[in-house]
Image 1 (cartoon, one colour):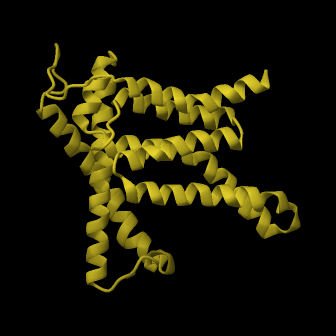
Image 2 (tube, rainbow, N blue to C red):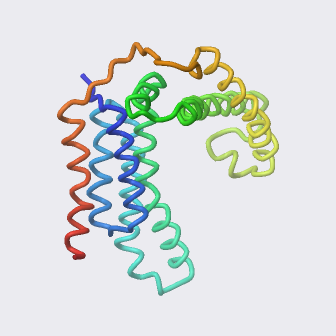
Image 3 (cartoon, one colour):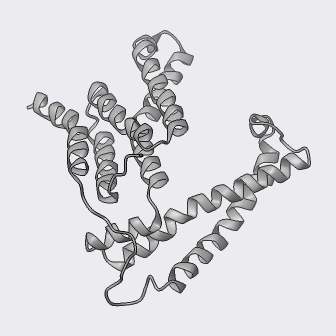
Length: 231
């Protein structure tokens, strides 16, 4: 049985991650909150994604601990420190966003936003955005499969070894198709009646449980502890 969190609690975690970046709470508080957010992937049976994001975050954290103190010893160390710190500080937002997007359906998100009395002018773009990135990702996989079939930039490192081919065969088709994808998804959402006035019904039943309050509160403790120590 996988752990299911209410979409409203996921939105709070996403807001919390942005607060960590905004207020720069420090490495210890950030690492504690990020570790709790990474644990959600394993509780939700997203083992592969959780392992990859954990390896990336804690790898950059190790670089910050062992390399950043020696940053003044060379240009390469300075550059490595700058990149690692910048990426690490943005990773909590990426991690919580990845968890929210990968474990929330459009019906759940729409129902949660309506429970929060969010205007329909906000709900419709959110519903389109949630479906936009998976659709673009599928287009990217199809383009890569077609390129591999023709022997163009094969392998995982092929795009890095052939940047001009990657720009021509991957980036340009994706940019040209993104506008069509957005229009198609908007039309599909409106066809399903998402923009009709009045009260909408939903087959998805949302219910806040005790864990939807306790787990976000637990993730907030490092931020509160950091704020108390600064007073």
